[in-house]
Image (cartoon, rainbow, N blue to C red):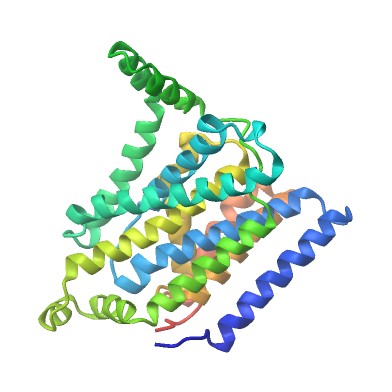
Length: 332
């Protein structure tokens, strides 16, 4: 097992940190508007989401399109902590930082737990069947959040008033507003570095070798004594953890969330980044997520907003025709 990152990834860590510092300074001196800062935040969040999805789809060989469900769980859990249970507005600035960090980590942990529990039954399926079930999971979570008003009424009827008030504040189909904008460049860069570093090191550990063996040949891996269910569920839960953290960052960057922010189109968006960059390539996920996020915003800035959904798919079609395996080859 390697104890230090290869030079290429060390370059990424240093480059992202330097980019974060430059953007912060430019925004601080009013050279760049906060709009550009937000683009940088979304680039980082999309890298977190795509790299974590790559762990399931690219390195373990499963086909999940349920990442938006875990992102929603992380986003709503994080907001529950910072805006409902402990109103961040009442906390001094210094204490709001650990509160935010705890809320994001809690969102990740609950997503991890849900990923583990859900993964146990559904990861017995493969291919299209797994894709359909994970797609259904996205709709279950999204519809469940929309029904929190009805849940609040039901809880009130059984005299669980405290839980009823919490469910009501989740907003149902209205969403949650006035979320504090805690996600800044420091946190976005920190979580991006954490995600890439952890997954990179995991893939170079004995666990990573097992994930890769399952991707190459499930039957051969099982014959070598690999507990397929255990390792599949583990990779699914770890990816869900980072998706939950990404959701917490997303909610505190956008400052308003709605159940439809986490529909199946959101999952497809990350799948597109993943396939464009190349399955099984961390570099591909990083570059595709970053460049496509910037491209969409660039088209908006260039007054081509109405053409975004024409130009964007055309680029995808051209890339897929020329390089169906993605822009980058597999790292491992």
